[in-house]
Image 1 (cartoon, rainbow, N blue to C red):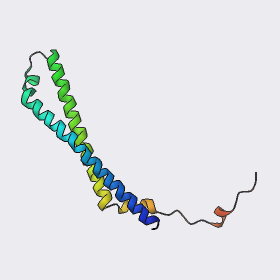
Image 2: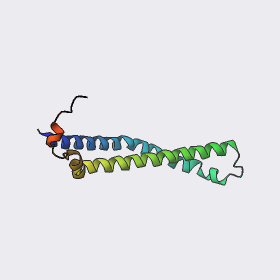
Image 3: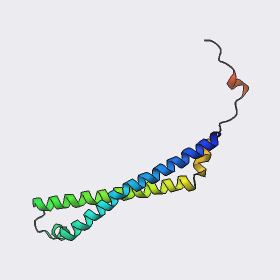
Image 4: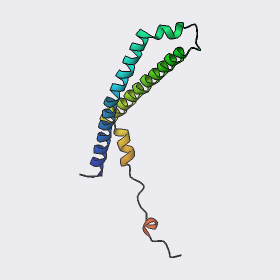
Length: 118
């Protein structure tokens, strides 16, 4: 196998690795979505209808809602990014292959001559 074959193999393996990362991030999306759904069924009306926003329960519920939404968004972005990047490397990695396998300019006679002693 030559250098170009090894480059293609490396691109494909990295694409598979990114798809595995996307699959591993799916439980976080499901968990955050379920937590948000349960919170909305149980407490969401209380958070926005509270007449005492300085109340400790209000602050705790609001913080939990923010954490859940942040977790859901970050997990979903990870899944989308890893899945798209992995799919691109598996199916359309030609540009990346060309960038990596590009050879430099040919060596000239002055490039191969040793430097004079100092």
